[in-house]
Image (cartoon, rainbow, N blue to C red; front, side, top):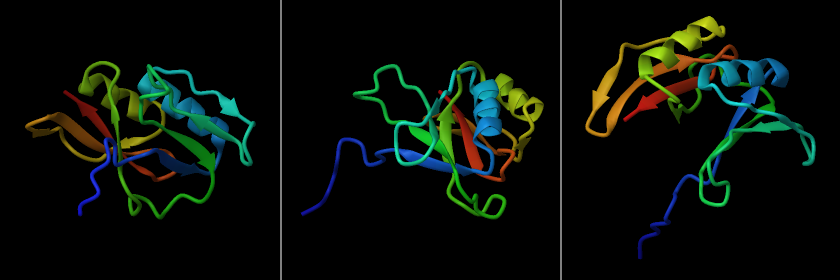
Length: 124
């Protein structure tokens, strides 16, 4: 028997050294509002989805990021063009690491956030 869920990824957690700075970085890059959430056991900031009952998202939390670029890569949907989102990564204090890579599903680029977390920017 093979396990094949509707959505294999349930959510993603990204450790950051300063939650407020990370909220600012991800908010600028993805043109979204992330707000601190203090209702759980640890402060965090959720990535919004159009329908929280169906969307797969994740959150930022204060923790210890992996050594730069050595952890998993979380790929995020671009709010506009891939090129515009790549520009905002640099402007917000991150770094774009790759040229644009084209695959059958769309295009993406690898980046590093200010804490050294590996992120991907994806556009269909």
